[in-house]
Image (tube, rainbow, N blue to C red; front, top):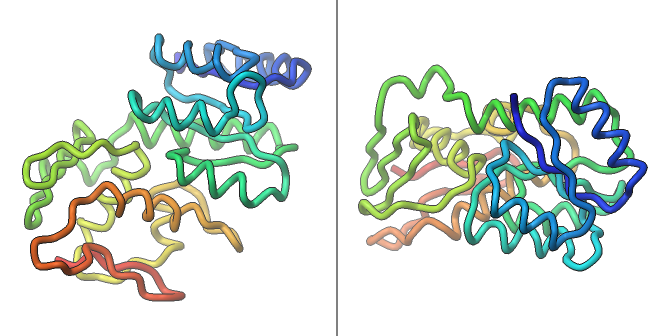
Length: 227
């Protein structure tokens, strides 16, 4: 049974979500302020965290930022409908995905299952063992990435993105393909999820010795991993 931590100060919504998620077979733990949620997230192991942005004591962004210094637990941010800046900030700080309020129950459950599946179930193409390309080594079974044999601290989404790029090194991969392959959803208009995850990944990758970029952006088309 997958364990979910819901951090939201809307008691009525939390109660409704609790009933929904338990009916869907999840084990739910709830926290109603940011500090309590962070304490639980650090003390226990959850399969996914549902994190509201506006919280008492500690904002959702602060919770996420502090969480990412110690754990890479998948996080689905719950944002205000139409508030683009909240989504961007959440992705910048390491959220795996976001869902604007109010949301459809089925979409929430589908997003949760997709994120947990990506984090815990290795895709079929990971069964071929480690991938080695230049100074990058990927262990898909353990979801570990190394650069010059130094472990990179990546979220599950960032690892999936790196794996997809390295597997098709030298080839152009469109944002649509990356979104479906890595995030498990079709790319929607004005959706910047892939851009933000790639930006986070770039920050965590050491510079190449020759100074060339590891990932080349082809505006309006996609990305190429430079072999």
